[in-house]
Length: 331
Image (cartoon, rainbow, N blue to C red):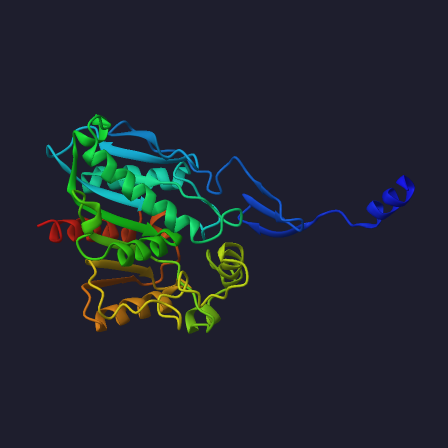
């Protein structure tokens, strides 16, 4: 009996790698995963002391943390709050990755704001809608801080909870869209926290019908079509397509946005980003529905340019646009 079992086991091939994402995630045929403890982008952290930061647990059940940033010498007594939800195709990324941390340092310094950078559960171990649920939990955590008898004074002493903006980068931009739809204009369920606007930075949307920028985009693009498909394959609920409402805001099964009141939304994309056509269409359709939308496109720029090259002219322009967007929608 034991000999038969051993022979059968020997006949079963060992598990093998079926998917890989930027060297930090490997998915195997038996469903198991391996994650690198190191970031995909190994760049030095630019911490010069001008911005203070700390971590806090916002979801003990899932052991999720948020990284908070504030200027060491703020320009005013109370500062706006600016969420930065990182990207990574819902599969990789962390608030602690140095490229995201450096961007948050710059946001805190140049926007003169409190930056809230939450982690969220990643796919394929935790497929959508887990990431969106976690981002909502992070926003509810902020509300709890605003109403707590004994809040974290590091945050509450400087934060203006009536001036909150939610930005998201790539997958984070997708999450920001769903938060905007879920919370609606004025975010009444978050009182005294008030969301004033959303910034969707190259939001990661999809669909079963290829756009020209997807179909014709270069194979060596930073975010190429193969990687786009891989991220969706790993993050979508099993058996679903990229017309799922969490992927395609205007898919057949998606919620109609026609009569929904939304806060102002800033939408940005690089002109050479494979997501360009989809992001532009998103902005155009919302604007046609009467929503307050600002669309900005950076000619020749690829996906993620503002965190990959944060000191580029385009990244500097984007920072100024973010600052203006906050000022215009804080009144």
